[in-house]
Length: 259
Image (cartoon, rainbow, N blue to C red; front, side):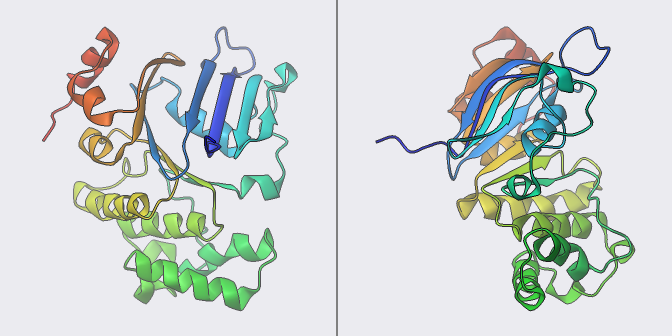
């Protein structure tokens, strides 16, 4: 019996109010459990919007999103003007998301940022949540910064805290949206190392990135998104990055230097 995929997206359409064309048009794919699914493509291709719809931050106008076989979002054509999907808080915690801009609360310490959602949304015991938060911080090399404020941290440190904040909710799928784009080059490696560690631990992840060498190293499955469409898809990352099938993928990859 074939194992149920962690995430299934079927015929997803996303269109903003008053827009002439959908930003995502009839998108379909599956993310197997324990695998790393990477999304690449030029700016404006719909990559970040795709993650936001999967996370329940924006409604969809067509198609379905299923988590472990359970449909958690169905497209509604009348939702184009809505700012958010109708997904419940409980469902949202099953999919974690780490943003490019960290989005840490400036008035809370590192520990306070990480423990807010599990205590407020999941109603978990604060002491238990704090113990787990410290273990997660140890995992990313920041245990000594648990009482620091966000403004006292480097960009790389803030991004690692944001990863801990997502992990403490025990998400079935973890989404990463260009998480190194706002970092200085020397801080990029510390965040990518954490993500590589998560991949080795079997965390199901969907990653939007412009770091092509990293994508080639970590990906189990790759899609190239362009103009709101999947123009190439491969479950052989090495083949995609070294010998893509489509002319569009060849053109896109020629703009990068590979190590």
